[in-house]
Image (cartoon, rainbow, N blue to C red; front, side):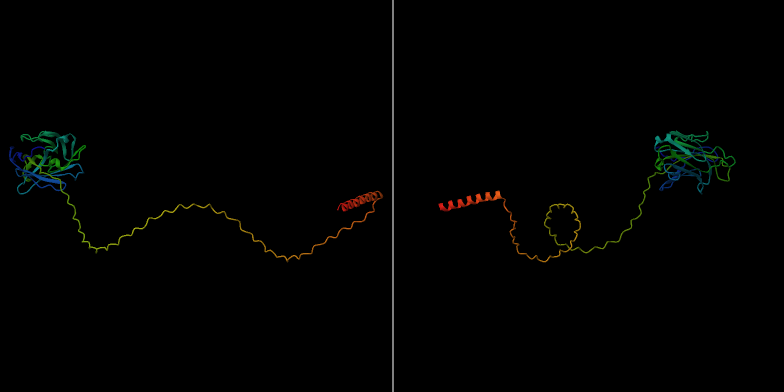
Length: 303
């Protein structure tokens, strides 16, 4: 970061020369900081904002303002400033409707654009410089007393931290009161205020009403331990029952009356028809009968 200074370099309204000046500023707010660079009855207000142009970009709003102590108006020709980190300079760019030229080089920018847009003789050089409009008022068409431009980087998000206590320089031409010839020329310098990130306040937390204390809970009697559960043997699944066909009912049995036993039949000897033996048969029978009779007599005699 470059050393801040508040020395005014400029010319009076009647002749060129060096004069002392001061830089006044207001405290930074949540997303911007504003400060004044004054000298020889002339005041320039600078406001830096790192959200107005989009996140990561810094918007510069520069206005020549008048009051009882600073009655002069002026044509803004150049704005010069330092940054905290010189390594960012190669990726910076500036755009704005009144910007006609810009330059970036660590601690060596004291002139940019046309030759008269410079801070020569101040003994100071800056990291960046911007030319606003062109030389001369051109019948009032180029009398720029207020301008806005945006500073951005190709790959890094910029914040107001880059401008904390940074040095600033202003090149003013056609300086004078509104009803004068405005023949003066000024080179003013000043410094931005120190910047710290804003503290985001959290909304107050609504206090909840006190919770009513509940009465003490009666202690429950001790739980009686149950005996262990005996595991049952696994149930053997029975085979499915085969359905039997329906039983056909039989007709009732009619009881028969008891059978009366019949007396046994005595068989009568069959009467064979007497056959008349033939003569030869009779002779044989006679021999047999005689032999049988003789056998009976012998048995009887032995007895």
